[in-house]
Length: 224
Ligand SMILES: [Zn+2]
Image (cartoon, rainbow, N blue to C red; front, side, top):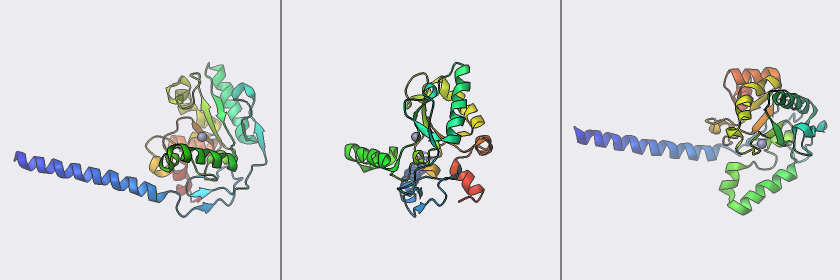
């Protein structure tokens, strides 16, 4: 009987390894395949990810600098997103929280250099795991913002009090946590507690309340 259990455990163990291995292979095959160029890049609900890319020439026409009170110097977002972010940051400030933009709009060439820098320095696999290829970054839409909190670090944003506040309040200003933990196989990006995407209040509220990621919202509403 004991031997039988041992064999059973062994089989389960092998199946688990196989499952994770196949999942990993599947992930690699899913992304950057059948890439489509985005048709309406100015749409507030534009979907940009590893399968949907922006043209090299796309630059939003309504970019504006975020007020230095809420941002590092020279960070831009599209007008509607900028105004929403400034309101979010101001309201946070009134409660003693500091939500500061550290990255906003990034152009195609900037992203190209950034991705290639990671490839040269750490290899392609690493680059693919932490950065987007040019045209595939949401930052080119002018609707995505990376933030830091009062611990002054965006990659440790999760450790800040501001993260907790953002988790339950960002949707009220039209922003969603774009790359949550546990949805990497859908978004194609690892968990990024600092990266927020403007989609407008109604959609942000819906996504927040239904615990979705943007890809799921787009698919459920036949917007792709
Ligand atoms: Zn980002």
